Length: 417
Image 1 (cartoon, one colour):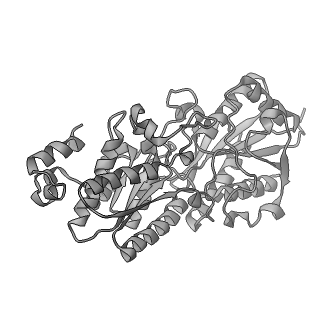
Image 2 (spheres, rainbow, N blue to C red):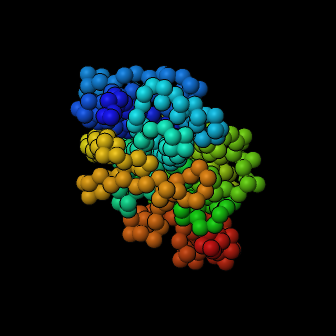
Image 3 (cartoon, rainbow, N blue to C red):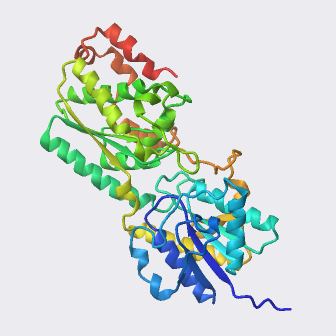
């Protein structure tokens, strides 16, 4: 018997926004409709599906034809995690089945990717016909794509972040005697911080990958920033911008967490960095160090994150995401499922969910900055930061009112691994 069941694809967007989401939605909708499918855009991620609620919009060409140029997400976003309870997974699968959905396209980061894999596995376990493909997005650029291939949204976020940082640098130079501490998004990896800092010419950029220890004292970050400020001060420039990746918070020793205030976690167990004023903590600590050596300096902390997530995508991300959306539909139509779609050398390449797991429950592999790469070493060499040879610098030691020997003893630990 010929299966005449109408083919329906549902689109679910999870996690936080990233430039290009609407472009994926548009491409999926147009290509699916071209193949005669219906398209349901599910509102607010998995949150309604997990309650058995059918909150969606039926998408068509007229609704999506120009949204690829816009920022944000027309379907809204949610960090709801359907994998925490089997009842939620069951509701997601059953609700999609009741709606007649045959295909599911998820758009999100590692948490949404794991949710997609879990939904696919649960549907299979229950004997439900549901093919699932995940489209990777995050401005953090930390998903396990092939080397050199960014996650969509990253390039737009880097471009917008660079412009913001350039403005801060000009403000610091114009007002003089001022530094900005720019804390950027990046839950685990420092790709975004490094990309923005390197492009804008930040004086120093700190990322979690440069600290090889599992945990470090907060004072280590404070000392690195303080020494960078003083070393630049000796060149006659008493202004600058430092970029700090928020993922460094995860590196701070537990006993220092009290300096960061109350810690709250999201649905996936991650620290809600947006609720921590890490920049203010660093600002106060560095100001105290500068006051101890009678250096008058104004420091302003700035968060660079939310201003990047809903920016209209640049042409790179528009082109990239339209390819991903088209490739996701083609993959499903060819019988594919349980994979993340990627573009490699201008060709669509699916990566099976099973290959993406890092072995820990609920996580995909995380792509970190390679600190041995030329990309990182070039960025680091262009920074003004304390180096081993500076420990013998008399002028630098004098700025801290220390002998060369005492200066070396005080700050030499920064180079001990």
